[in-house]
Each structure stands twice: as structure tokens, then as C-alpha cells.
Length: 510
Image (cartoon, rainbow, N blue to C red; front, side):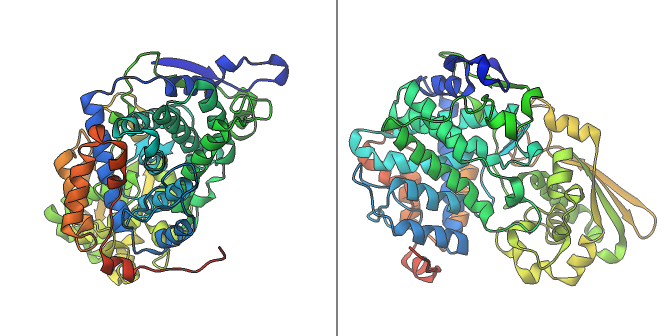
């Protein structure tokens, strides 16, 4: 890897294009490098993961709204169009709208892969826009191998940016790293020149910088739409750049650019690692998926709660508990804990989106139920249960500098996303325990492999996708590098006729 120092420049400095971060990203994207077997295997795992959470969210309101919008946009004249998760293969829409609908479906349950470092990210958000473009452009000779290479780039660029540039510190939403990564991935997939990818990256970044209020306070359905919009805008940016349209330059380093006005100003310095020429892209292997449908920083805590449910069932009864203190990292405390100072995180009437960003709520339910379900755990009646509310209000989070240090460690064996717990019981005794990583983490108690990804898909698809359709998809996706262009349409998944008929069809303007 090569580390690039990135800062804001005055216009008079005339920063050469070749020294701009967007150009360096584009250089990485315009080089096709061999994909290793373990990286290929993980790309397939994540495509299975995305399809699983997308079909599970099919009947929910936000994906239904996005889907009905997409279905109003027929394929454009440049290709065959793309499939929408849940719809039959013969139903095609314009690629950018498929990216939109599928992006919302994938993100709705907050249940797919994650990478956490200086910034937060769900790198699987790259899959919907790249898959949509691949299906649309299949007639141009695009193959499963091309899609594989594009996804490797998308993951690489997003994770490299997340390692180096904190957006949340400046109250910018994390999807500002997704626009450039998706544009870069599409560029690799299509074999575009560095110049074209550079222009698309600049446009994608310029149009996807928004405030972080989408993940603060009363969190709304826009939480799922924000990354979908970034993917849609990346597709459109590529289309414009291919037509010769240019972007603001330098987009990161300019005097009125992103760093100068959104990310710390002229005193800020960022050290961005990017692969050197010919280097294998392995960043996807640094990411991890979710066993539970909740914000990633709660995953290890859910597993600890499950353990305590088995070993100490008495601590799930508020009558026995005086208070529970979760000592954790700065990010966890301030994003999903008391450090956020969001009263909504303790409100049983809060939205699902808010509750899946409330560690005290999530821990309470997992402790009492011995598990955490993507549907049942968020039901209004579950949140309002009196013993849950009583225990929930007795849980607080605090930052522990050691857990913060481990959160930011670059040593995979040391990096941690959990914390330590003290349960102060009514009889004066204290129960102590800790957990570093989730059970499904590569270094956890039960790491996810292909078997677990397939099991997750089958579990979430059960009762929604016909068994034959589920097996057809699993066969197709596991042959990804071998798929010819005409077979890429098979990477969509159709839900049953009953599930389709039961889903909302909200009306809008268009």
C-alpha cells in the first residue's frame, strides 16, 4: 500500500491532477488486478448476504416505496435494464433506479456487512449499483468476472477511505465515501479510462456530501435511503463522465473543496492508503457481516447478552438489578449509547431505525430473550413491555479509553468492538464480564463462512422466496466468475406471488 497525504490547497498552488486523491483512486480503479481465491469467495458471500437482507425487507414500507418508484422507470435505451430485488427476472427498470430500490432494500434492516475505523461504513452498499449496471450492460459483453473485479474495487476504495478520513467528526454522513467507491467500482467493471473514472468520482463525491442528521435523534426511514441515493448518483455520475462531462476539481483538495469546508479546513491532514500498481486488492477481507439485525457496534453486546441469558438469567429481571454499566469505545458510546444525548434512545415509542441505534434497548431485549430477531425484537409491543422498559432505563454506557484504543487499533488481533459490563444487583453483588468481538467476526467464537451466509439467506428467505427460486439464486451466485452476460440477470431474487401481493404499494407524484 502507498500512503498519500491529502490536504486542502489554495487555488494558487495549482495542485497537479496526478497528485489529487480522486485521480489516485481512479488510477487504482482503471487497473485490472487478479482477484485471489479468498477475495473471490468473500465477494460471493457478501452477495448472498445482501440478497438475504433485501428479500427479508421486501414487505416493509421504505423498500416498497423505493421499489414502486423504480418500477415507474423503464430501462433506458443504452441497455437491457436491471432487476429489482423481489421482482421476477422479466421485470426490468433503468439501472440507476434499480440501484436506488435495491440499495434501500439492502439497507433497510441494518443487517449486512460493516467496516469501522476512522469512519463507519457498510461496504456491501456498493453491490446494488454495480449489480444494476452489470445487468444493464450485459449486452455489451459484461460478465460475472467483470462484476467481481468491480466489486473488489468498490470494497477496496470505500474501506481505504474509511481507514483514513473521519466524516462523522465533522457531522457529514458516511455515504460520502460510498459515492466515490461505487463510481470507482463501476469504472473498473466497465474497463473505463482513468480520466473518465476521475471525473465520475468527483461528481459522485460532490453530490453525496450531506449532514449526519440522518443518523441522529429521531432516526427516520431516510437512513436506508441515504446510501441508496449515493449508489444511484454514482451510476449517473459514470453516465455523465462517459459522455464527456467533467467534475469540480480538485474535489477533495480545492480551496472551496470538501476538505477545506467540510472536513477540517486547511489545518487538516489525511493519510489515505491505496494499493500500489499491481498490488492485490484485499480490503474486503477486513470487513465483517452481522449475525443480528442491529447497528454493528451492538453485535458483540448482543452475543454477551445471549451468554448472560444462559448463565445468569436472574440479571434479566429488573427486580434484581440496580443498574447496568456498559464500558465501551468512544464511537459506541457516542453513536448508540448515552454519549449521543438522544432521549429517543430510551423511548419505547421510538422508530425501529432509532431503536436499532440504541445499545441500551438492544442489550435489554437480547438479555431477556436470549437472542435478537430482525422483526420481533423491534415490534412496538416488544419495546413497550414493562419489564423491558424498567431494565432498559437502568442501563447506561460510558467511554473506556482502553476500549477506544482497541477500536482504533490497526492490529486485527487487537481491534475490538465490544466492551466490559458491570451489573450491580439489588443484593449489593456485582456481575462482571466482557467481550471484544462478535461471535460471527473472523476472530469471534463462531466466524461466518459460506455455510453461515447460506444459512442466513435461507432463514431470511423462508416463507418469502419459493424454495426452488432460493436454490436457483444460490447456484447462480456461487458461479459468479463463470457467469456470461446473459446470466447476470439471475443474480436477482424473486419473492413469492403471495409476498408480492401482500407488500405495500404506496402512491406518489410520479
